[in-house]
Image (cartoon, rainbow, N blue to C red; front, side, top):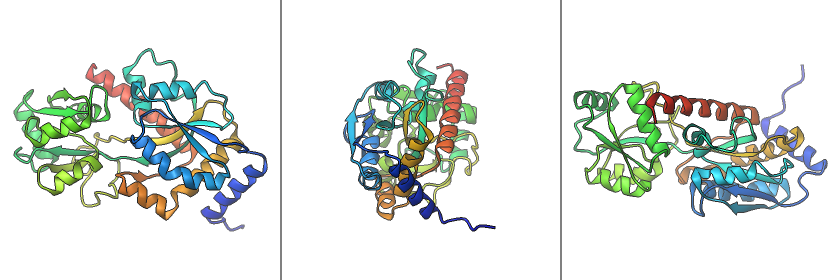
Length: 316
């Protein structure tokens, strides 16, 4: 029986083989559906240099912000499926179909998945004055005070909003949503005790947790973040339905040929194995992922279906 080649060798061979076939022969455009400094932009910049070196071509950023990433995605889906225009998508990519009935594309059908780059964990944090030391304590308090506990979010339809909605559905409680214009004001009001709890990104809340101004009860990922190895996930804390992933990944327009997909994916996987890249991701509050296009495609389909179900059940 032939021995399997190590993954690193397979990735190197894949990159070399497809490059020998002629792709890529010019710089590639990476659309960012947010503004400069957004998480998608940060993760692009962390990975772009190494990927460009592996591919032998520069990755050039193209900012097209607005509508929770829908403007950038709507532009990308109409470009030729030749591998020279892709987009770094964020959580809005899989949430928008549940909230916008007039979306001119279907993320689960109209794009080519290329690989998940990073997952940004959220934390379930409460004001320290709240008599809840863990998730079960918060659930008990919410059941004792229906309609009296308020949670903040970065805005209607934001991940932090839908995490609270999913908390209500999963725990069978009635807490009240308070939308803000961004995550910053929500955190300010949480720290001051104006609201009871929230679901900010871990990177945005960790300094306040360490200072004692907030209490972290759980993280919402499917597994423990490298930033929070000692903090239980919500399922570990007794709430198995509360899994909220903020995934960032590359997709291209539908119909990209397999050879082009393979070389892009191989370069991405090799990039995400790089020690410096992984450290930079973690330092910026993300868990580096790296998976196959098929796995990424399955993730997109599952997330789109989940958020459609949550929005429908919540009557949003």
